[in-house]
Image (cartoon, rainbow, N blue to C red; front, top):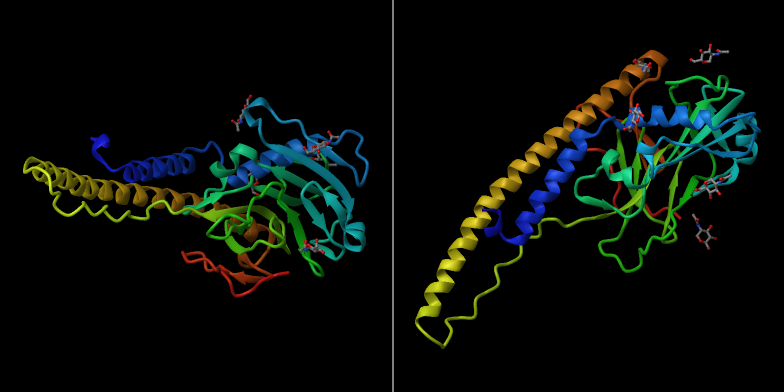
Length: 314
Ligand SMILES: *[C@@H]1O[C@H](CO)[C@@H](O)[C@H](O)[C@H]1NC(C)=O
Ligand SMILES: *[C@@H]1O[C@H](CO)[C@@H](O)[C@H](O)[C@H]1NC(C)=O
Ligand SMILES: *[C@@H]1O[C@H](CO)[C@@H](O)[C@H](O)[C@H]1NC(C)=O
Ligand SMILES: *[C@@H]1O[C@H](CO)[C@@H](O)[C@H](O)[C@H]1NC(C)=O
Ligand SMILES: *[C@@H]1O[C@H](CO)[C@@H](O)[C@H](O)[C@H]1NC(C)=O
């Protein structure tokens, strides 16, 4: 049956299957992965020195992910920043809240796991998802820490992604910002491969993937001047194409609904947890990062604040 469908329909079905499975079947949520990676990152500190990047060793089943930890005094972060922390460049002026004497900046490169933990329907990631998260360094054996809030008050933090061939790609690639509260923001890429942010979180560059541009049925060359038999065969073929497209369309529709349901479920779960945490630590509303401003997000809203072309940073 599948073979009768036009190739794009089969492709779309497979796409939704993969997206659906990876969203629903992942062993952890993104927040749980953050928590696990925090533990491994802190584990990399053996007699830690301030200002030195330590690469963490991860178990075999997380091969492909890279994690590092950097311990800093918050005063030094504010006054000097970090000129280079893998792809991140942190300028002076980054404020940590609540105040801690020392903090740990955990770096994540999710490698092949990126689309599993940060799927964005309608977009394909061009780069791995990179993360930068701040934690209190008071107890380096602590687990299940919640993130500190860091905010660039002057220049933004920049993330330079290597190997983005953005010049030739249409539509134009976008920077994606995944907030810790599950929010998603978009912004323009600067200098071909750099994204700018004022907050911590997860970042990637992605391009809109046109999964279902319905190809116009190729107009059959008007009644061939040849034999009588050929016309009948063409009609039957067209019939099959129509039937196949209708069935395929229905399958795609149900697959999309399924995927949308899964995404909603996951996001709600994640959001609930973040809100519980926020409630405990006394933080107000979940906030979404949109370009350089922070906007409160109503939890039930499905449209997220996003920014297309209104603002070009840099
Ligand atoms: C840590 O990992 C980064 C990125 O993979 C690499 O460039 C760096 O050389 C590593 N540092 C050490 C000390 O292994
Ligand atoms: C990796 O394996 C360990 C046991 O060796 C298990 O506890 C952990 O949940 C696994 N992690 C993932 C991401 O599969
Ligand atoms: C640090 O955290 C670990 C694990 O939560 C805990 O067992 C230990 O008592 C803590 N140490 C201090 C000094 O708070
Ligand atoms: C981690 O902390 C959250 C609250 O901040 C709590 O609900 C959860 O049970 C903790 N998980 C573990 C494994 O301790
Ligand atoms: C973009 O590139 C120019 C020239 O290389 C550089 O001066 C500028 O700082 C870059 N901007 C960002 C935001 O990285």
